[in-house]
Image: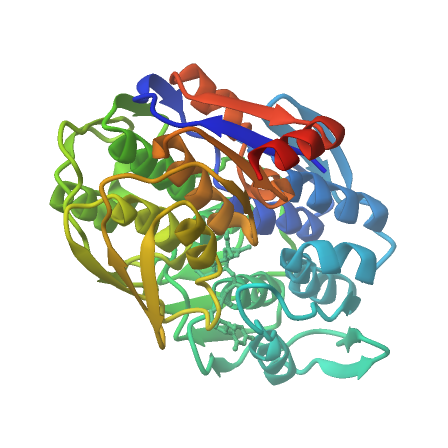
Length: 428
Ligand code: EPU
């Protein structure tokens, strides 16, 4: 298992290009199941969840040809209507195959995702929505088995706002008979990106970007070309890293308009930001000021940026309060940040971070994707060496993070299992 060895202290300087969004790419790849024509996608991020999705879709019969950051999908030979446990257990987003398979082929079998490090994360709303559209669903031997000759449009009100739930039902509704209304729909930019792609494939959707999506089912969807939206979470991760190290960096290939809350919070922390539509320059000349926030659905503060902003708060000039409202267990980075010298207490769903002047390197363990990113940020400012274990979490969702950080001047190195074992002992 690879680890990352980071020697803290370097101020990040230079330019970095932000990749396509993981959480837009995953549903968009599944949309390839909806048509027998070619789908051409650009700005595909190269990360492990995308490779897992590629394997999953290929075993269903979807043809994919990837060249650099572009991919062409063709769903003419899709025949295996199943997402097996082996794949779903490594990536929950596999559930996104359910809606497209069912609506186009009348049947789908997708393993139930199990629990996950950040929370229970059930998929009951995906199931409830499809049942409302007339699907017969049985849960057997750990699988969701869904059947429907033809899904029928209806009004669906989900109990809570769910991102992949909205995406699954939206894809299902595109080929259903009649009108589907999705109330309480997620408004995240990644949902909007998927909806825009579906429209260019011939879907009829109104209310895109709002919490009420109205879809008129069509008989068939056709091929399209689409550029995957820029990754706002990757952008925020780099912005926090630059702010924490007191650096000066230009981020390119960003969508400034979907980063409002993050940018406001960074300004509040003392960062100087110069922005236009696709670039952000961040300069940080002082120790960060503490920033408090609560995570909520878009356009509120994203749960996927909570851990990275917490890392920044660890070295702030004062105390901050961070409340997590989306997932029940998304503070697993707290213990690890404390191992680096941070001072964080948890009270219920709130983390109270008392900024300290410095962090000190130590061996730490990544527990989930965004937790890993927060440890990287903390390690970049910590004195001495930090060895981060289980970075497969990081590799799932970031496109060559250590290469990008190293180009900005960070002292960061991937170490293979054997070498890292020796270092782990040396670092205590
Ligand atoms: N929920 C239910 N039942 C459902 C669906 C959701 O109870 O049927 C609950 C969840 O347990 C959670 C809340 O609703 O407490 C919101 O979950 P949501 O369904 O919105 O999350 P998701 O669709 O599984 C996506 C992202 C996550 C991101 C969340 C929230 C993808 C592939 N994943 O997950 O991304 O944190 O939305 O914005 O889009 C990440 O990238 O690190 C990541 C975890």
